Image 1 (spheres, rainbow, N blue to C red):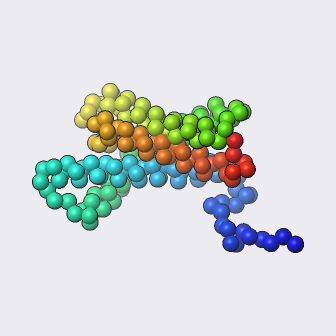
Image 2: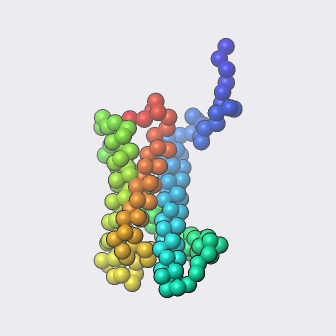
Image 3: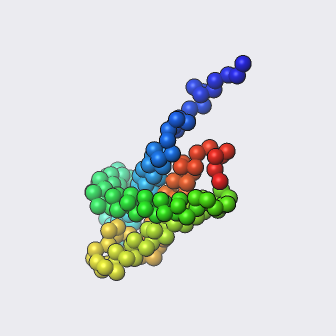
Length: 171
């Protein structure tokens, strides 16, 4: 008689959940985490700028900045982040569908496409709108651009980890 360990080891989703729904949930979780990291970076850069001007920024002030930017940029930046990653991850999934790719290579590829998609987005937006139209102010510097690209890499890696299922189902 085999024991049922499902109550002791819960999963994020059941086995009955379809692949499409797993893909959507994975995308939403990855995008929300990547977006949140991006907002924390942007608020930290803003707080550092204020400190550079001699204005003291306490921890509650920093947390308030993060919360206000999360909500404020959510109407513009979050949908762009979501659509951009949805298109890139979907296209990459089509390219890698029937390829013999190891798990490590697939994860690195998704992380790379997440980072490159954000870099391309920021640079093309800057070219069209100029530096005054930058969606996220901290991307005006090279360090800020690299930091935000890292959030795209985290989103890509997390998407791949969540959407591939268990280790036995992964590539």
